[in-house]
Figure 1 (tube, rainbow, N blue to C red):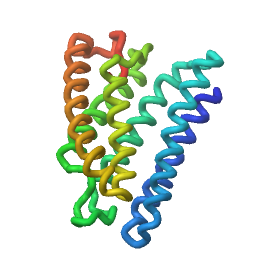
Figure 2 (cartoon, helix red, strand yellow; figure 1 turned 135 degrees about the vertical axis):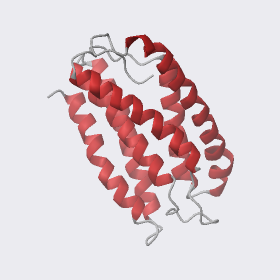
Figure 3 (cartoon, rainbow, N blue to C red; figure 1 turned 90 degrees about the vertical axis):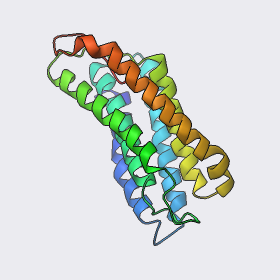
Figure 4 (cartoon, one colour; figure 1 turned 135 degrees about the horizontal axis):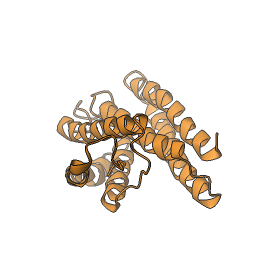
Length: 197
């Protein structure tokens, strides 16, 4: 197993810790800091595995498969948790609007299912992410980071996290439609396949 893949798998192993820390917030508000630290660590591993793969030419089919799936597993987990009223917000509500969480989760689940199915069937050999997909992922990650930070600082939540959540929803819908139209003619496991857009 290559080092980039080991780093990616470590990101997956951080997810249960992220969930546990978030669920402890209601009883122990200081766990907000733990949750933020764990999320930051996972974001760092996401940057690190890509850098190592490119710098040392260690890219592999396994890595091109597990890296986006690890990202989406984290994305779905974070959206679910942030859509729950467990963060001790002043109004008692969840930080992330349920409808925005549903938009992000639905796109990621559908695309992950497609990528997994084509990979298992041997049809997907290349996982090149579109520019729109990269921008969407960046906006989503930035929004989730701001949301978690916003549970600690109301100004960040109101002026950064909330506007970013609407931007993330818009980019998610746009990239989802782009992916659909791009691969509508290749709905066969014998096609070239494609990654999350």
